View 1: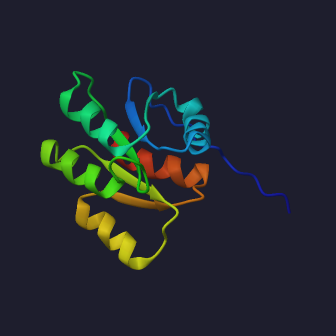
View 2 (view 1 turned 90 degrees about the horizontal axis):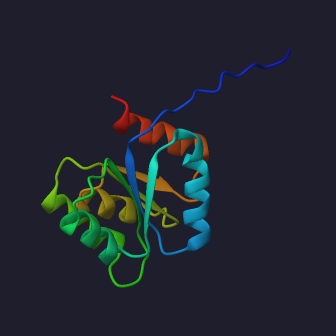
Length: 134
C-alpha cells in the first residue's frame, strides 16, 4: 500500500525570526529549513548580540531560535535578559545538550520550547507554527 502524505505549507511572510547561533553551518541549515516559509531571518552569532538586537533595535521580532552554547553570552543568559525586556516574545532553545537538567534550565530561563539537535525540519516548522500562526 502506497502511503500518501500531504505536505503542509507554512506561510510566515512578514514574520521576523532571529536566529542566535554561533556555528555558521547550523545557521545555514535553519535558514534553509525556513526558506519556503518566506520568513525574514536575522542572524546573531552570540547571545550578547541577540540581546542587543532585541533590546536596542527598532526591529520587531516575532520569534527567536536560541542556541545554548555560544561565545560572549550563552543562550540561557540571553533568554533571561530578553524575557525581562519582552515576556511575550517566544524563544525556542535549540541545543545538542539533551540532559533533563539542561532542559529544566532552559525552561527556568524563560524559554517557550526546547528542541534537541539535530533538529528535523518538520519538528522545527511545527514548533514555530504553534507560536506564529495562532
